[in-house]
Length: 319
Image (cartoon, helix red, strand yellow):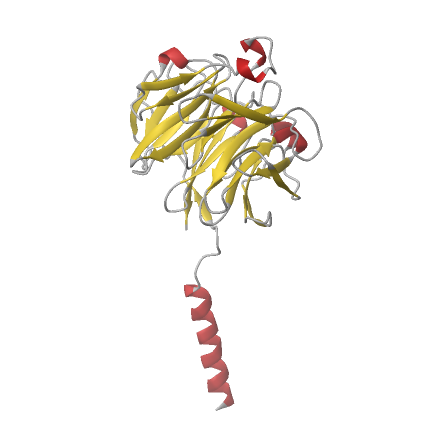
């Protein structure tokens, strides 16, 4: 009798293992998920990736096709923005009055724009001369923009003087905060900026200080996240928490207190991290190079844009 019970227990245990659900944040790397038409290539992917409500994936590059659009199966739909070639860096898709808009930050043109998802320019905001922080537009190189619930927006001058500027919904400059430094509330390359509606805070990816900092929507400093990151470039948010693209070869999922939920695709070779010139022969499925931006889809799938001269966009499918 004892033998029969033992055998039944072993069978039950085996079946339990066989049907156990996947671990949280268990992702499968989608090899060759994307297709490009003949004669079209990404060029340098020194920009960002965003996902629209219908699942379309928007990617900014430094090429003459400044913005690429794919469906969620990787099929190429269109590209546009030739007038934005070279320096189109930050992207954010925002729902405003039941319509989605594409907001961009351009480092070379020293400006922020609001566009339709088809690329029609609705508003252009030039360098913040009123702030008194710059002697010319050339000192201002915005890398990221985020829109607040009241229509105001914030622009991170990541490649300029490390200020974050606040504008009203019509593009009028209101104030700024930050500036270069290591103290709380200061930045060394505020590379990415994101509004988190779940906690009503603004998150700044303070890249060269290797940290995330949180602020109220008026720019008042709230707190720093103590988790040390590998040069965070960009943060995307959803109900789970924060998806962080780290330039030194990793993507990390954090909860809202900064606890690590999952590291993804960490690059073991330090020489390949934060290196724009890694050619195809050094690429490996499941391993990132220099994650510059990462975005969640509606079902927790992930898209990652590596900073790479050949152009690289990866898709991770939730299991």
